[in-house]
Amino acid sequence: MLDTAPPGFAEATLLDIDAWPIILADRTLSTGRHLILGDIDGPHRLWVRDPLRGSTLAYVIVRDEAVDLRHVAARRLDRRLAGAPPMRLPPGFAPTAFQRRRLGMLLDILDAVLDRERTGVTTHEIACRHVYPAMAIGRGNEWKSSAERRRTQRLIDEALALMNGGYRALLHG
Image (cartoon, rainbow, N blue to C red; front, side, top):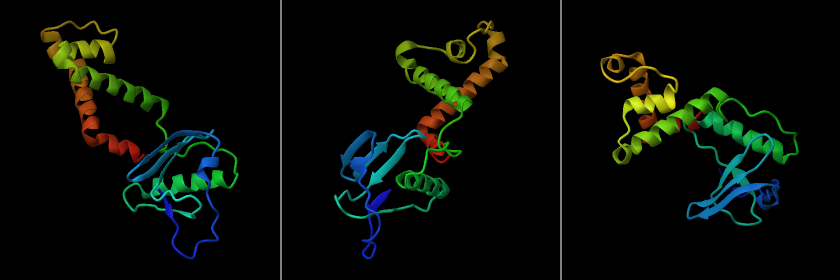
């Protein structure tokens, strides 16, 4: 988060956000200006609370459970503004390949569950489509007592938990 610097910091370096080479998203809301700046080493997400042109900006780092991640993000942006070369994203900024696949599967499961009323999809069908594409277990007692059914139900519960606020944990790394 960036905001107008307090008095006495006028000599600080001015930040011209509009001069950034790649602006992926730029939206001004009642809460301020929200931007995603493109970069080789990953996007920078900014919230400029008081977007007055020509004013010196200061980093505002909220002291919450994500304070360490916020410090790293501010240092990362500051490095790039100083002309430093790109570097790999620190842990917590982007999911691993395994996590991306798992999150994609959870989103597919969530879509299926939320669409259940219209489509009538069952837990067995969710398992066959999204979790176990080569599953040979049929319906009935074999399915009801299977580990595949229990795991599918746990994944459904996890997908619903993500939707109901659990996604915030992803944002904290």
